[in-house]
Length: 173
Image (cartoon, rainbow, N blue to C red; front, top):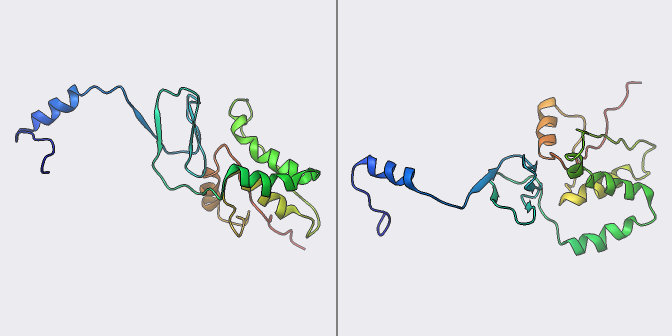
C-alpha cells in the first residue's frame, strides 16, 4: 500500500514487529449478549455495550444485533411506561423484562412467567410491553411452536434479558 508500512521481503521483519509491539489499549470482541465474565460490560440485544464506570477495556460487538432501538428512553417512558401505571399486568411485564441482568448476580439461572387466560384479555399486549424494554418489538411475536433449534437460537439472542414467546401449542381436544 502506498505510504503504508514498508517491510523488507523477509517475513521475520513482520514477526519481529508484531512480537515487539506493546499496546496499553485492548479491545474485547463480545460474541454473546449479556454480561462479560467479569461483569465489566453488558451487551444489550440492540448491540449497545453498557460499561461499568471506569471500565479498563474497550468492548465491541462483532455480530448482528437481533433488536434495534426504536426511539429514546424519554419517548419510551412517555409512550409506554406511563400507560402501565395502575395496570398490574403491564407493570409485572415491565418488571419481569428488567430482571434478567440482575439474575446474573444471584444463584438463579432462569425464570419463566406464563400469562394464561381467555382470549383478548391483554396477554399479548403484556408481552409486547415487556419486550419493548429491550428495543423494537417485532410485528409478530415469536411462538413456542417452533423447532428446538429455532427456539435455542431465539433464546440465545435474549441471553440475560427477556425472551418473549407468544401462543403455547393448543391442547388436543
